[in-house]
Structure formats: structure tokens, C-alpha cells
Length: 108
Ligand code: FES
Image 1 (tube, rainbow, N blue to C red):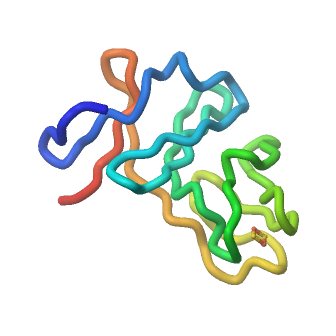
Image 2 (image 1 turned 135 degrees about the vertical axis):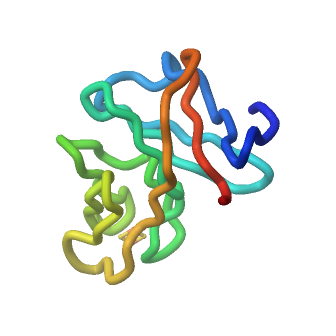
């Protein structure tokens, strides 16, 4: 991880995330899920909004991820909760790829 740069923070090398897959990256005690959906990168919280579960251990299909615990489905680009038992959306962070790394904006 790099130090924040104008609110932007490098999470991981883009090459670490295979296409149509997701990895968990921990930064300062917070777990983020980094998705590569057909070459487009998205970063969300890793923790499911329903209960304790890691979405990076879930099932990625098209632009959604299915929680491994109760099979709730989120739309990754927007964080929208698509089905029960989910009621709350997933936080999605502004993200970009620069210099081969995936960056997110943590503030500002
Ligand atoms: S913990 Fe994710 S759907 Fe229940």
C-alpha cells in the first residue's frame, strides 16, 4: 500500500486481480474487495452488509457478487442489494487504475 496521495491510496497491483475475480486487500485494519470485471476495476467493502462474511470469498458473475454465507447478491458497480436477505447497499469507493496499480479515494 502507498501513502495517501490527495486522498488516493494504492491498494494493490492490478495484475494481482484476475479478470472476473475479486481479492481482499487490508489497509489500516479495513478490508476492501477489489474486483476486476471484464477489465474494469471496482472497490467495495469486503464485509457483507447482512452479517459477517467476506465478499472476496463469494461468487463473481457478470457485474454481481454472491455472498458466500446466505447467497445475497450485490451489483458491484453500484453496490445495490439485489435480493434478500440483503437490505442495505454495499459501499463502493471511487477507484481508478494508474501505473499498473488499483487506487481508491478514501476522502475528499
Ligand atoms: S452474510 Fe452475506 S447474505 Fe448473509
